[in-house]
Image (cartoon, helix red, strand yellow):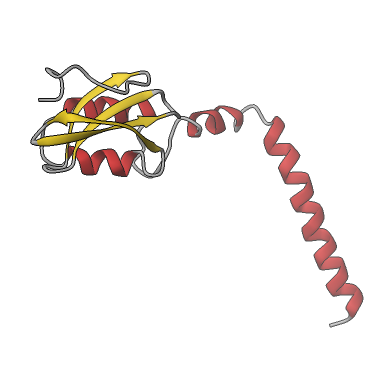
Length: 127
């Protein structure tokens, strides 16, 4: 194989790649599919709001803490500790979606969920 044919092959591949990227950006059939994928956060196929709703639905049940960690891995920031559950609960804030989750580590359950940054929940919410 001659050097010029190898060079021509790489040039054609580079040209096809360079043409395909702008074509995808302006093609109206592909644009809605790209916008829809931005709502999906991971392989679960759920939107962020659906994940929050599931955590709210399962709060107080065993495994809800695991669900919280899977859905919001790396996004939770501890902002407070308060009496509740079987001792102390940790309030975890997710700045990506502006929700605070109160988490009992003894039983691995979410005991309260509220929109906004909440440093301390009412005692009746985290019992």
